[in-house]
Length: 149
Image (cartoon, rainbow, N blue to C red; front, top):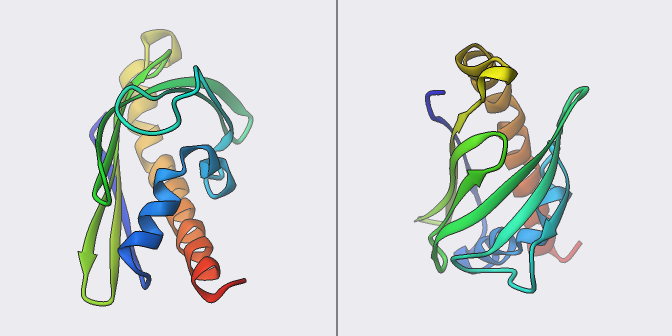
C-alpha cells in the first residue's frame, strides 16, 4: 500500500501535544479505529515498547501487534506492524509559530488471504478519512486539556 499521510495543526504548546501523543495507552480515547491497547509487559514508552491493539473498521475487527522502533522526545514515534498486517507507522510533531503540526503516516501490507494489494488500494482511502477524523479528535482533546476542561 502506498503510504497514507494526514496531518493537523494544533494551537497548543509542543510539551502538551507531546504529553498526549506519548501516552500510548490513551490512544483508543481519540482513535475511532482502536478499541483497546494491551501492553506486552511493563514498558509503556520508548523503543521496544510492544503492544497489541484491538482495531475495528466498521464490521471488520483485527488484532494488530506494534513494536516501537524509534522514539525522539517531543518529535517522533515510529512503530513496526508485526502482526497479520505488516508495515510501519509514524507520528511526527513539527513545532510551528503558535502551535504544532502533527503528521500521521502509515504504510501497511495486507496478506494475500486478506486481499493483499487490492485491500491495500481500497484501505488507503478509507484509512485516510478515519485518521483525519482521529487527528481532529486528538486536537480537540489537546484543546480541552489546554483550557482546563
